[in-house]
Image 1: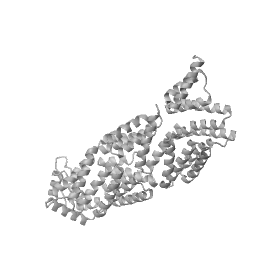
Image 2: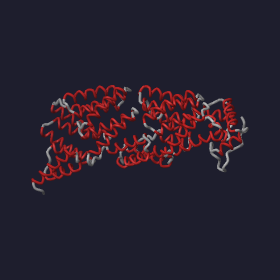
Image 3: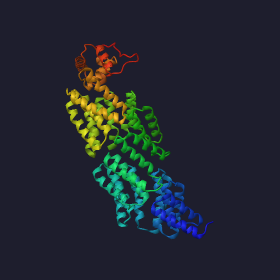
Image 4: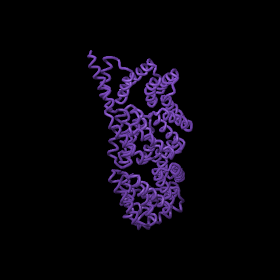
Length: 558
């Protein structure tokens, strides 16, 4: 046993470590003092905080429980309720509804027994508001979180105020009023960055606001607050909670910015930090996305499976992977199911893939419907990212409908938005479609400029499948004076041995239109037969050769 002086020194140094946010040191010192003689309620709360922030969940729960009992014994019912809240609320967030709800019930009992009108009543309303929001009643949740803010303002409690504003922002997003939500979310974050909010509440607010940025497709705001979260985490010595989520948010921003190796590294760290938790699903999904875009299809498949094992549906990435692997029917089935499972603005996460896969499988009407729905969501939300996605989708559909002039206008709108967002991969994809629209209008020089720029970007990113596609498209001009995107599609089906009727069905166009496209192909390639056109196309890598090195030539004319 140590001396009373030893215990006093450990206690003082533990309190000082709390002030420095040196959480591991604080926990070790306070635990040592507690081993000599039981800590009082205030020091138990400090030790519980340090235990939580260093990932010592079992110790944290025991310390909060002792702090709660100590406050009850002192007759301090408000502080007793706060201890019970900080024990129960994180349990609820982790999905442990029974234990979390039990401790929140104890918090309510403490307040009822004390008859307290205090800030802690606002904390308990937070859990009520979240449950209402999760039940789909955004209007009811908004009303509850307005009461939370009122309680926080009345008692000048920064945690309650921040939670009230955060919850109102989340509820307004649920109601589709993003413009009203954003200032509330920013105000909650400003309180956090100013150091007004306690550490546990700060981490919760950070993660919730970044999730809201993802829900509202606000890439610029997500990047800003992700940087702030990273700085906050770095300032908390030995911090364990929130670091995994921070890595995932950072990986998302890095992926959007085209920094794929760095994004993959951060996502992998997130997988390790979040191992065994449902949040790891998002980290695995991000790994799958980077692998897919780089052409590492086997690695992508494994990552998507890991995401699924953690409870996250790996869509639309998995459907797009199947399309890239040459399984369009599987891709179509997967994306249709994924789209049916979501509603409201969240559908914007899958609609671009619906358009891409529908166009690849000949479902032009389905592509048009999805593109128009995406444009409607973009108009309602007003996010630049959504505007860019909608412009690309509608431009791609217009191009498939043989309306290149209208397509070009929409695609150029999207290109401007992607450049504003600093998203090089998506900007390059839009430049490919822009190049095809220019080619269809007979402007081969502009088409070449667009395709060359896109190819350079894909090469820099390591986007091998996209780079190879652009090289094939660029080869069309060198091979035959500039085939349009639709003419290339017809030529590819001719090389497969399809009849005009089969080509018409596959591309959802008339047989007459197929014949017209074939005449243009023959003229541009300088040939007079399907077999000769196929031979030129294979030599120029416009279509793949068969197993024996040549394409099929047993073509029928009808």
